[in-house]
Image 1 (cartoon, rainbow, N blue to C red):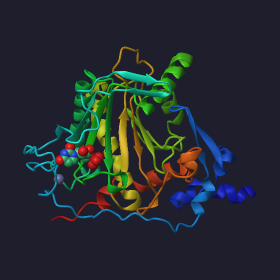
Image 2 (tube, helix red, strand yellow):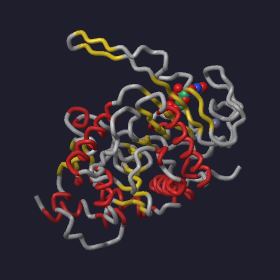
Image 3 (cartoon, rainbow, N blue to C red):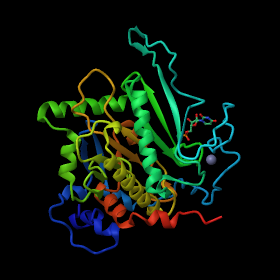
Image 4 (cartoon, helix red, strand yellow):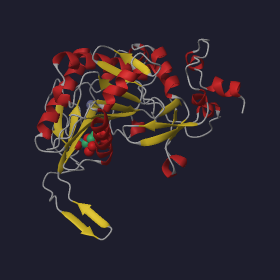
Length: 373
Ligand code: H2U
Ligand code: ZN
């Protein structure tokens, strides 16, 4: 194969539009099909940089409607409105948390285990909550003030403490945008808490524990210091590192890591929470600015389980998994080879990070802000 042609496909300068010489420290295989190892999940991802040039005649997503009202009488999350389950929301003016009316987990379940040969099952007691981020139907986290976002961080931490007193795993997450299955544009997230370690949690727990046993340090802190100032960093301050992980699967996937040892959201101090609010607003502004639309994603926090084991190996972190690939209307599908063999991406993590850096943190606040009513 032609080395020149292959290298051109992965040159980050193509993504930012500026002509820069190719960095000789970048391994040549990064411009060719190669596999990257994900130490957090102990799995591999196939990276095929040359495929970004292929033509697209498939499905295009419809961008979400741009102009929402500040209050929607038909929204089941707006203050004062009735929910589908019949209850009425209070006239809240900050955040508001309630137990999901259609919860996937409930507390009154027997935790018994049934084993009949290869058929194994366990009862799973748990609970599901919905967190309204704001009374404003038309806001997104990217467009909130730092104080408003800080309140969300505090709610995530308080809910973690409360649910962790009763359950082993507390999963804080947000599905944003219809593309990701969110049922309503009103800014909201969810928290599911359960008795078992879910599959992803168990794999991260095992990988982090193995690293800690072997090296005496936290895997993600080692990773953060290796990436510091490098080509995959999107934002960085004294407390937080936001980067497109080396092993990213989703096109603009990011990882948010506190730079000091922190196991859970509850352990974040005042300054770390304030700066997290800032870092998240910046990241979401970049996402929204990338294609000029409110960027769909699933995001969530992974934090140390609440059980009797030691957790010195655990480092708190958030994953953002956005599905959009090359425009507001073209998304990545996890199908075919990905379902049957292993995950694959076209754009390299370095190109994705360069594009997110080039957008500018406040771009989304300008370009996707609804017109004043
Ligand atoms: P998603 O948009 O991520 O689906 O979250 C909305 C959640 O809100 C969803 O899990 C719940 C749904 O079950 N819900 C209620 O609890 N009450 C309602 O009146 C409607 C939706
Ligand atoms: Zn609403």
